[in-house]
Length: 121
Image (tube, rainbow, N blue to C red):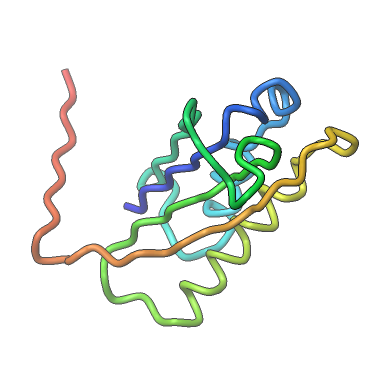
């Protein structure tokens, strides 16, 4: 735990090819001091079909969803959300010509309903 999913509009694929978005957000969580390193799981998903406001595909987005086991304080959730947004925004290239909305939502998962197993060979 936690699980970080970053969704990115496909119109940003070319300008972000080497931006390191996933690594930046992942390391922001590792550096937060809130989690043990092996527990942080991150992934990036390209959104091929999307619309943003009235401008359709003329704008882009980078949205992170961070799922945590319940029990974190509001201050911790805000700290993590801010850290992820700052890490993502810092990796956006300048001069791409595409306005980009960067956001993060932190959601609690029910601790009693969460199961985890580690399989090793």
